[in-house]
Length: 193
Image (cartoon, rainbow, N blue to C red; front, side, top):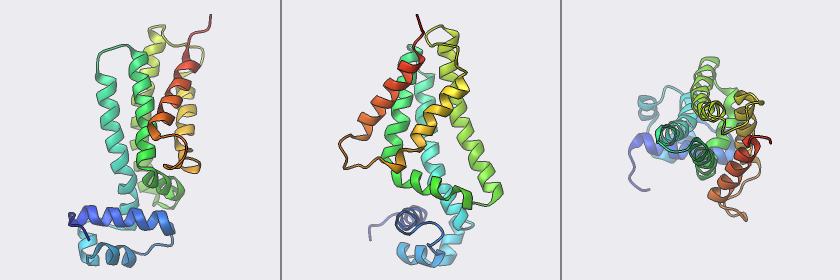
């Protein structure tokens, strides 16, 4: 077993087991055995199996939020920034597909307060993304007859659906799928003549 910090090893093994067996079918005992630690060590880093599941998704969302913030805060045309942001969220979702699939398959199993926290974290990401759409609509770069909320919900419905059909060994890379999704998004926002 490669030497990783205990917390990371627990997350890696939990992700692997949740992806293979499902969240419900994976016990805390299986996770700690696979990670080579004690239950006490696990509970030092995570309050519960729920907490582990939340962190599987939260680490992906934190990384994506950091990347989105960097892209959105850059100077340059809003259409280019939105295209990069859209391509990036697709590419990172495909890169961490197990994390995303596990989460969307199991979110309903989280405790209500954890679900509320996760929805708020995801909403902050969507709001930052939506701000790019709104900026382009204000500038006249994007059509404004479709509410930005609908545009973003439609786009992310497709992103969240990637886990049902995308395969790393398929005909398209995550970057290629990201570029196509971003192209489709910007085409749908092009002003009508």
